[in-house]
Amino acid sequence: MADKRNSEARRLAQLIKPRRKAYLLGLLGSSLMDSSMSLVFPLLIKLVLDAVTAKNMNTVGKICLEFSIIIALLICLTPLFQYLFGKTVKAIMIDFRLSVFHHMEKLPVAYYENTHSGDSLSRINNDLGVVENALSGNIRSIVSLLMTGVYSAVIMLFLNWKFAVVLILVGLVSTYVNSRFALPLRKISLEIQQGLGKQVERLMDLIAGAQVSRVFQMTGQMNRKYQVTNQLLAKLSIARSVRSAFLNSANYTLIWINNGGVFIFGTLLLIHGEITLGTLLSLILLLDHVTNLFRNLGSFWANLQSSFAGAARVFELLDIAEEPERHNNEAKNKAHKNESKQIIEFRNVSFSYGEGEKILDGLNLSIEKGHLVALVGPSGGGKSTILKLLLGFYPLEQGQIRFEGKRFTDYSLSEQRNKMAYVSQDSYLFEGTIEENIRYGRMDATYEEVVAAAKSAYAHDFIMEQSEGYSTSIGERGARLSGGQRQRITIARALLKNATILLLDEATSALDSESEQAVQMGLQRLMEGKTTITIAHRLSTIRQANMIYVIGKGRIMEQGRHADLLDAGGVYMRLHNMQDRKSK
Ligand SMILES: Nc1ncnc2c1ncn2[C@@H]1O[C@H](COP(=O)(O)OP(=O)(O)OP(=O)(O)O)[C@@H](O)[C@H]1O
Image 1: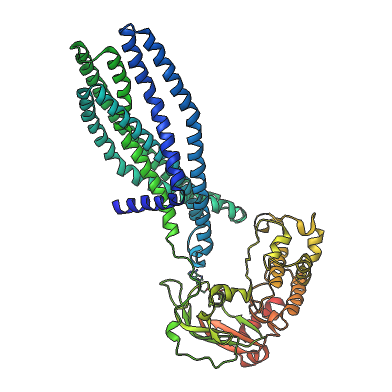
Image 2: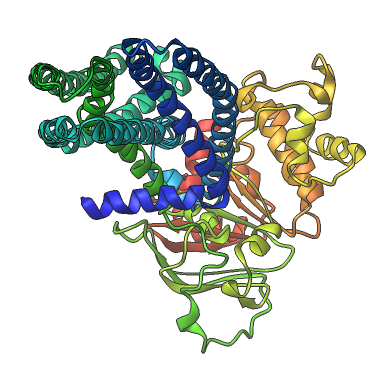
């Protein structure tokens, strides 16, 4: 645990490193201003009272003038240091948020498939907010407290060392009591941060699943799940409050013992003539700062521990390995020489997600350049997994994929993906205009090229019917468009990319028969001279395919052209007949 804390502190220090000078100057400067402000008054009281007791009015005037200058200086410098500190913390956080964002961009698809988006969102929102608090509020409070307390103690030592020593000894008890509360508070804070993550997950489900939850009348279940996280959070917050309350009452007890004892001791010193009235008053005012140090150091430390809990969750996210430039686990197959002319070849490929069962099991398939190849077969057979492997979303476990005659790993992942365009069942549309969404296919495309792609995808007409044509904003995930319209925009985006290989995963599934026919025609035009791998459930759409692979349980069950497979009378024929009967 201590190691972990150290590592979080070290990593937070690393964050500050590029702006270390400005951060330290802002932090120490503003803390110095805070503590100086607190010390000016006790000193002024002592000096003025001593001068008044000595009836030395000239000195009183001089002291007042000097202190006026000091206070004016403090008033001018305080906002300057605070501005520097605030600005530096913001700059550090901007860089940090950006690096977290960049990291998330590079995380493997597997991370997103296996982690609830609410958890990630909570880490980059709530937990990063907590880190910002640590860098600004928490650390500054501790430094200010330390400075004020230590200065006050030093001044007290000068004013009367006996008084100061008694006070410090009593204060150490207070620090010990406070520090005992720090660790449990940190533990609860970590649980609260995790609970907040769960709560965001529930909220994400509520928003993203708004339609489904209404159709399936799920509000009861969703409410219950939300209640569970809410109650857990409430329980944890109460536990934290209870511990804080105990800490506070322990502190109040100590304050009274401390103040009472010190007051009696100070009065005795005054009666015995060891200190003046001015010194006693000044000591009593300084006393508050020193007891504050002993009393609050523990609880401020505990707050910092809570911030570390948030930081730990962000660093945990940052520690997840990014996608490599290339998957290199095929290196053991170096001996394999390429003698094939195929554009894509799977050789004895086996794959499973994590520790689970084999999804692909010694799969062999080859795809010729310019061909239209269809993958069909029962649900869960592994068709989409084949496309995911081609896109490099997962590394291979066994076997190899060859690509344009070379090993897959001879290409970087970005080179592989540059050669491919992908339209999946639920291709994502981004917040922005229709034009922007199509242009993501190729950022340097001209407006005319964007329009041409939209025309080929048979999207142009409905785009022109929108209020602002290509500049129409489509809303989150294209919520202001119909399913078929969304699909045609994603097809236009893929068309614009003009990649050598087209991967279509049920690309026309969301279209009505009329627009499906239109898109099929557009795709036909696009596929000329390109290699297309399409996953199709409706076998009527792949009659023209050069090769059809029937995939089941991660293996090829049958392969051939449409007519051959029908003649063979196997799985394909049964699927075909079933669909035929349904359509009639
Ligand atoms: N990210 C994942 N983690 C774990 N298992 C997964 C993951 N994605 C898919 N699977 C499993 O892999 C198997 C094959 O899935 P895949 O999506 O490749 O099948 P498919 O043939 O495309 O199915 P469908 O025709 O229904 O789309 C399924 O059993 C599925 O549950």
